[in-house]
Image (cartoon, rainbow, N blue to C red; front, side, top):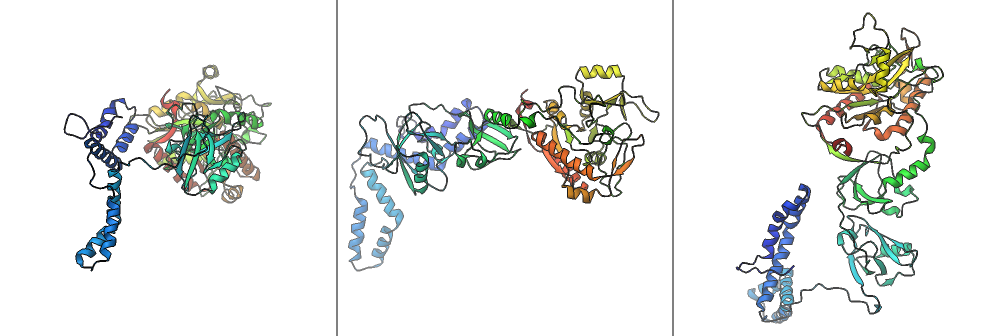
Length: 600
């Protein structure tokens, strides 16, 4: 940039140009975030002060004045020394005090620097042993603080040279702008590194204090400006770099838990991405396995899990685990009497029965076997807040039989019947005298039911005693169309087919407490058995508790990456309050949702 004058002519000064720059760039900036960054950067007071000094120095040079003296600081020291030998009166004491002040000494030092026109920064001396054939060498000095350098090195297998493998976004090396991927490292603090292993060089860096000087041969590769940093992903698995044998540098790794939101800072490396936790004030990124790399690893590591069909219960009999026509569901009562009140259910959920004795169907789109191509790694997400004129998000409740899911749903409905709603299931059995079409069930013919199955109109369905039962997609739409929150409980394998732009489901997993707490809290409760037509309630057995714990573990292991919230139903009142708070936040606060929901 050419130097600009601050004179009164038509030329614009650098200071004025700097102040006007954000406004000039505004039409060319893509986002408000970038524009705010420009305003903050160019509005920095220290930058303005430096620019003013630059302009004053340039104006001084242009006028080419001759300084009266070049050594004001030395003259001041000589004067102070001479005054010390004089009789000290009040004026001399005041002058000596003034000349000893640090700010006055600094001012005189600046005067001398300007007078001598010595504005260039002080650089370390060039080494004497530079090879004449080396056409480009950089000497870089970085001041080391407590944070890592933010760069990794490796040994080139062909040349044996030590090169910079990657620069961690936001780290000290990245912020300096002086070190780049591919640069060849020759010396660290004057110590040659050609014959050293990367581990030895790292040890030298670890032991260095204060400024670190690097001798580097720059890479000939041109780095393209990165546009990354605006992509956010939801982690669908736990990750600890200290347990990852494949990571190139454990210290540079980033730990995260399933459900954490990560900001992707770089995808330059196809195997190792750079990321940081969303909202983390620390700008330095860490290494995480890329989506493609993690998918390959999981597919190879867990084939036996990926192909196992989901199984809700180890019970042999369908009737002991599934609601049938009268009993509605086998659920934990959770009330003081310890008895579940039957006759309440509007969504349809089936457990598995031995296929040899019952031809059952559970899902209209795919089998409920775990899809080996759907390996949970990361999902790109974006913030979403429901607008006033939008339909409510579908709320999907998942949990093992007996955990109390249906009781929690009942309490929600009772708390506000105008705000919450449930679906009405379809059935092919005959309507009974006390039933009304569209209330307990929607009664349709077997032919029409099978036609709807073929047309993928059911979320899930099954057959019991030669009659079909199922929950239709239209029944969900009907509840949402009434401007209500639709409460739907389904088998977990169905959830992934509901995750669409239309429903934007929020999935809550109702989890049982420890088996010790189950024995303690459910000892007086009863579970509904549909073995007979009366739907008699019976006490929980040890087998019930074991089944509940095992089912919950299988659900969480195989489908936990689809859950937005986990609530442990230890105490029904506490669990209900947590559920209610979750619903309130869901309707008022922004949540992370898949990008595909907003950009389909």
